[in-house]
Image (cartoon, rainbow, N blue to C red; front, side, top):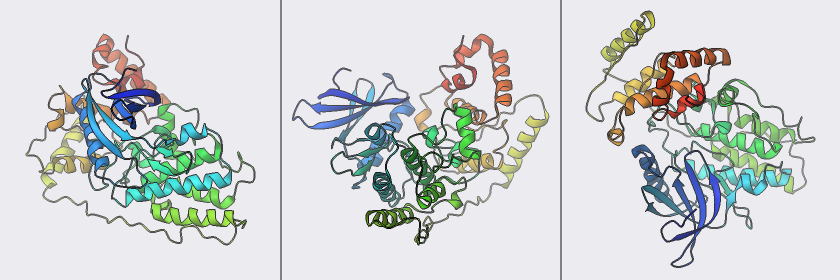
Length: 418
């Protein structure tokens, strides 16, 4: 990798599907930094907007357990986020996939829960908690959060049906197969999947393709830890499985409640007292998010028209195209989100919207709508997915290669275009 602006790249730390992270040093003053930049040398408008948004969100946070941002620079056509480097590395790299001893596990779990609680106090949900986005400082063992690309308030709808993080740690409500609201408890599920991995030395659902993995988060129960790690404390296992409960109502309701219980268990462990006796989990746990009314007023005629269109499409042989036009801020997205939630089981319904950020992208709203539909198809059983795959290939033929650059998600269903 060549130098990035004034920074000399020293090592690659992480490479994801859309971005790459490097450790670097300033040639001006020797300052150590971490650089995050897009892999695509000619990013789309939406990719650039995501990076700029992450920079704005992270710059406004002054949290002890969240990485600090220095600046946003340009490298060719790509934005680059420059983080201050305190030597921390990801939990995944630091522990190398091994199962942690109980003392270390409690220390790391408590540090991670504290970092998440700190972020939640700012009314932000991370949406992508996993061992790559939790950093540990090797000397102090302090845990910090990084990668706020998907972070947002639970009160603000994302520009899409669901906010997708890393599949191995995805909460059931992020999969799009439930009507449950994505709130702070989604982060707690992802944190539970992370702690489970640190306890067992393996991911919660291993060896599955994307579609099977989404189904597992929604319907399967993780293998008991005590079957993999002999003499694993029963109460600690109960705490982890409380975090990874399928329903948000059955999980910890707040990161603060989790911190309280982990701190109590760690203190008992350090004192040589059994952590399986005389402890009740969740005693200080309360759901603190204020519920907002989701009732929409003055939309009955719109919903009736949309309902008739959906029924006509289901009964007929041709798709139904609907354009909903109106001024910005008029409630179009909220209305369509509600209508989509009520028809979450219909694979024939897909919704996209146009905004200022997508004006430079041809067919942006169509691409967005079909991307959501493809994500829903990926959660289907293999037999049904195979049927859809065959229909797509027969229907598109050689045109599949034309659509693939616009909708790369298609490759997850059809494989590489001919």
